[in-house]
Image 1: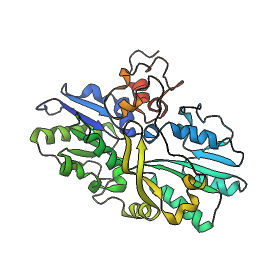
Image 2 (image 1 turned 90 degrees about the vertical axis):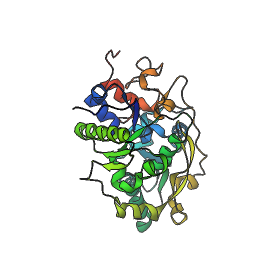
Image 3 (image 1 turned 180 degrees about the horizontal axis):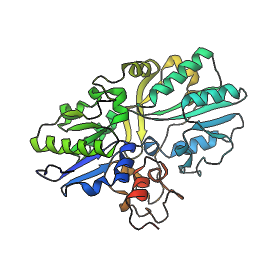
Length: 343
């Protein structure tokens, strides 16, 4: 593909783990003009979750009356005090929150706690599970909300000192829920262009070209190249069910710190199923392993190859940080597809 020549050096950020993996797998960075740099942002939900969650879940899993459930990637992340959750008998992999609800029905003597990581994409499914638990009066199912919202994280990135992000590849999955309208703050508040992109290499390449054109013309806007899925107003049914069950709360992000109103918590009428309140759990804290640069990588401040642990002690088989664990992590993507001298 022939790109427009940038008027100046520019730095673009993708904020979706699926984009990160597709970019690495397709070798897109090698095709970019010399003055265009593409960096990864906080688009991996497992990666931005604080490490103390693993310690908290590890302690809960020691109780014989509790089963811990979540997506598989989360269970491979090391905690700050305990090893990963992988292999613990009280831990079960679930593909969705509804699967965890079914597990609770099948195990009435256990309290089933679902670790609900994710962005706006997984929030509707979690909300449906909560409503179903209420409808069926299932009392042994609990949701530990780790859900996060995309906009506050991007705003935090752009408001940091010395931020050098000129444009964004906006996540197609999130945009399918919140719509084009969910990203208009980029040009309106921050004078940055954004392109909502699909995940095929052709989608991504075309989206980068549109970003270069908007920057060259100094006409930032939101453009949607994923119109086959993403509508201007998004999925209003999904938005309504999120708003019915959840409300915004402050949330701690790895790399970005505590961000106001960036998380989602269960509303008071659903607190019967709130694991935070049911088990009186402490707030999360950020404690990264010594030498791990995941926090800086998630903010686009460093690349995986700049971490001293990358490809030495930190590999997919022996991960130290979450960016190497998750199949949406920047380090895993770089290790699998961008490293020329794997050890």
